[in-house]
Length: 278
Image 1 (cartoon, rainbow, N blue to C red):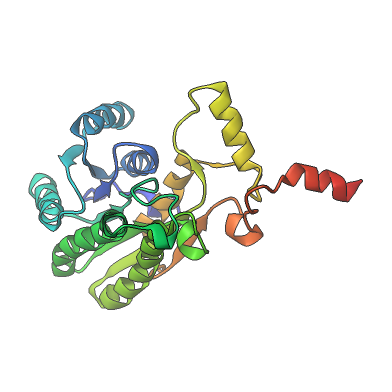
Image 2 (cartoon, helix red, strand yellow):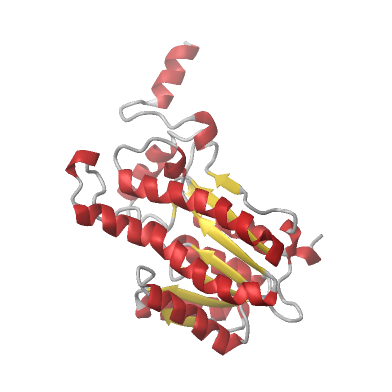
């Protein structure tokens, strides 16, 4: 069973992780490299990529490829795949992680959204997944194997009036996952999706920030926010042969948030529990 989780081959698996310079992307890239994969990390900011590359090299003993990429550009997504194949010789895994939850339009009602708010949010959170997937499939279909892992959000599975563009885009990612999985299953390619809930992507900088994180976590069934590293093992499972019979699936990892329901603004769960028990 443990062997099925290994990515070291031969030949060693090759993976692209978009949004791989920080947060969830960095942790998923770390898990893949520790399991033996060669990894290309892609993001818009080169200095962040270089810092993460140093970190990954130190923990794995191998240096990742870095490719500065704006995933809203189809040509840059094509170039990302081409450079990865040129460098490593092939491509086995694509993790579509890049996105932005706090972009233009966040906090606006539907009727307040400007055209650019909507278009920019869809471009980053849905178009990029399509552009990278299309580029990768051209190679994966020819080799009759491959894994694509998309990262959505719990906001794509419930009403999210404070972020309609992001929610719509992530709902699109979930359906896109199922649609592509059905289209390429006979090519030996699996396509799945992870749907994170609220995740603490970096340590709190101050005690005030830590308290805000604890308070936010009290609204979740698990009574805490997730940690970025916790997505790594799930991503590894879905990218490895351990999940060889899994395709078109969506895996929430949210501390029971979707199952238990996230309370509306203003609800104080601890006070309500004390009152009901008293």
